[in-house]
Length: 31
Image 1 (tube, rainbow, N blue to C red):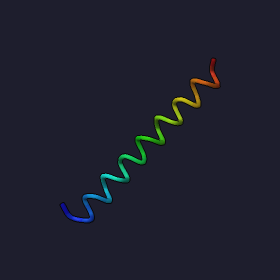
Image 2: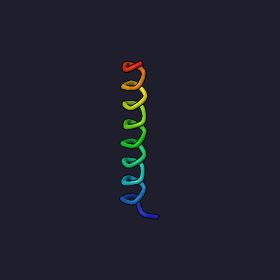
Image 3: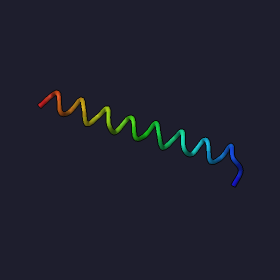
Image 4: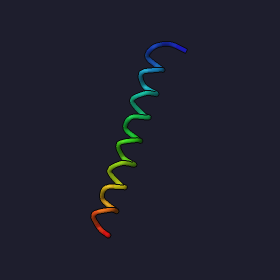
């Protein structure tokens, strides 16, 4: 696996984690 693929995967994971955290924060504020 090349470095570009690893970098893209890490970026995708980072974005998905941020999305989950943002969703949790929003739901916590709503309740």
